[in-house]
Length: 145
Image (cartoon, rainbow, N blue to C red; front, side):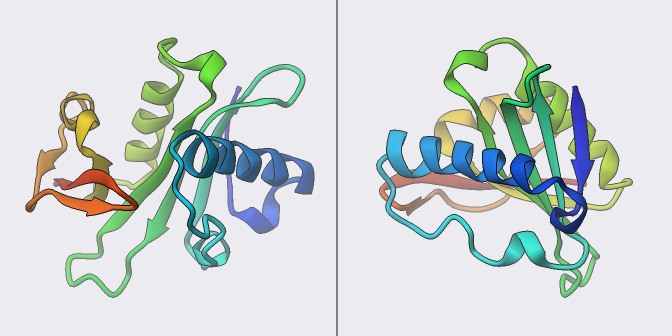
């Protein structure tokens, strides 16, 4: 089941499971010591999208942020993560498509792990800058619209 909400509207247990998945993949699996809970989840205009199974386990999630200070009113998509057991099953693609729709035609920015540039390109994103290292992982800025 695909769901979306601001953190304040989510059941606490759902946000806990969502945050635990982000930490499991980004901090533990990818060995990146950083503060995932960066305060941006609480910002007005932020939206969590997630897919969960019948038991409430989080299969995948993405976060949309309102980058209102951007001159073109861009939104950003980030924290795209899929639980290991759900990879390769199309769940992240369905969530990304839902996130793009939720952005309502506004320009969208994201910072892709570089090995996923072609995957994001399938959805219309194009490289928008030079590759850089973040937490030891090559990233590429990308943009849609």
